[in-house]
Image 1 (cartoon, rainbow, N blue to C red):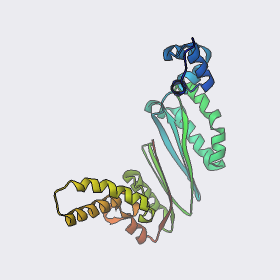
Image 2 (image 1 turned 90 degrees about the vertical axis):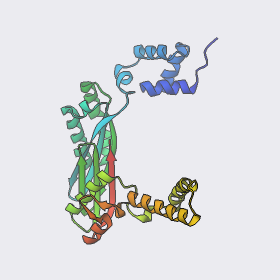
Image 3 (image 1 turned 120 degrees about the horizontal axis):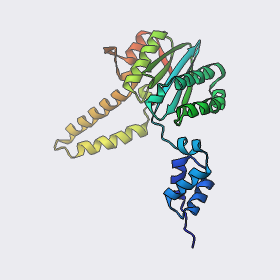
Image 4 (image 1 turned 120 degrees about the vertical axis):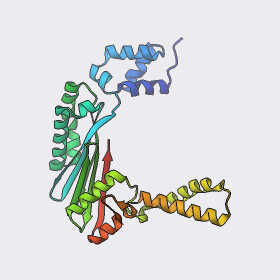
Length: 259
């Protein structure tokens, strides 16, 4: 009597190896549902790279940013360890991919990425995958990279590149979720209201005090999450909104990525 193989078993084996669904199903059938035996079967019948590298978890990597004129690109590349993220071949690969994205566009870079990545997988012995890639355009661009792990690009209308770079650095450190209060929808506010209502519900205070506490929690939460309301990290006396106003600038676009 043949063992019934479930889709969950197939998915687990596929997630672990990166091998095709049909190959995983056949291996599990041959192994009568034994995961270790199925892995051994796949090891004999599949390519070492797909089995040993393709299924490994990406835990490290680097971010690169390059700018030319009115265009900036941010490209991330993932690997398994920080050791490889600092490897000369890996760094060279990321630089080449970023140059391609800047010169030819993100889509063309993505199309040619595999041919460049595969040889470096062979050399380093680690799973390497192209991560997120963004293009940002504008008259005033500023960017900030923190240890190759956090990258931010800011496009401004007005202002100057120094202001744009300062704001990029601020965003890297403070991780705002919204650019301005206008981005905070009614649904978001209602969700947070429900959370904070539960927090104050059990407090033994008059209802008017609870209302003030609730309003205070809401105001504090969104002030901390909204870029325009955050205190500028280089000068805590002014907000980012005031910094923008002082420089007659507005934010057009922001891209932030962290490994």
